[in-house]
Amino acid sequence: MNAIIIQTDNLKISIYMVFIILSFVVGLAAAVVLMRREKTPWYVVISATVLNALMTVFGGVSITMLSSGFRQCGLSSVGGALGVLAATFTITRIIPEYKLQVFRAYSCIIPLMYSVSKLACHFAGCCYGMEYDGVFCLHYVGEAERLPVMNVFPVQMCETLVFAIIFAIGVVLIYVKNAKHSIFMLMCVCSIGKILLDYLRDSHANSLLIPSLNQIMCVVIVLVGVIFTYNPFIRKFMLDEGEKDQ
Image (cartoon, rainbow, N blue to C red; front, side, top):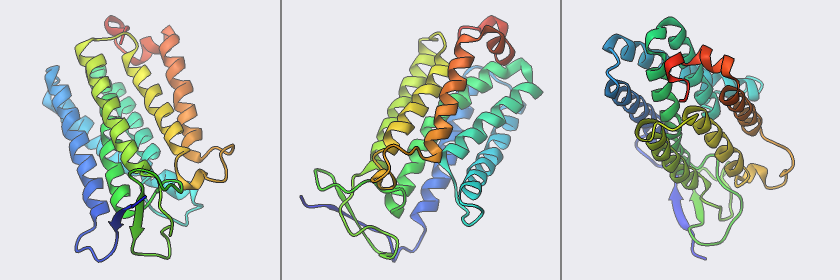
C-alpha cells in the first residue's frame, strides 16, 4: 500500500506551534460564543477565558514535566483538559451566579481544542500510530533519528475526526436538546474515546496490557464523571439547583 508522505523538516515556520495556537484560539473563541449565547456578562466571559488559557498551559506543561521526571517540557493534552476543568471549577466558585453557563461552555469545548491540537501532532510526526500498511497509512520523512522507518496508522487524524464529532454531539446535547446529565456524560465520552484511541499509538504496540499515564488519568475522569452524574449532593454543589438536570 502506497503511504501518504508527511515531510517534517525544512519548514520555515513551526506547523506544530501554529496548530497548538490555533487550538487555543478556536476553543476559547467557541467558549466565548457559547457563553454569550446564554447572555453571560462580559466580565465573566473575560475572566473565564483568561484563567482557562493560563490553566490549560499550566496543566499541559505540568503533566508533561512530571511524567518525564522533569526531563521534557511540552504540552500534554490530558493535562490541558485537566487545566480547563480546574480553571472552570475555580471561576464557578468565584462567580457562582453564572457557574452553569461557564461550566457548560468549557466542558463543551474540550473535545474541540483537542481535535485541532492533534493536527499539530499529525504534521509534526509526534504521537504517531502503530505500524500499519493499509489504506491511508502514513510515512514520515525528516528528523529520522526520532521518527519511525515504517508506515504507520494515522491515529492523530482519527483523533481529530472523532473528537470533532464528539464536540458537535456535545453542542447538540447541551445547548439544543438540553439533555439530562449531558455535561458529565460528555466528559466520560471524551475520556473513553481517548483511552481507546491511545491503543492505536506506536507506544502501545508491545504493551497493550499496560495503561499509559493518559489512560490512567482518563479512567479517573470517567470515575469522577460517574460520581458527579449520580451523586445529587455533588451535583447540587457544582451546578445551580434550578439546573440540576444538566
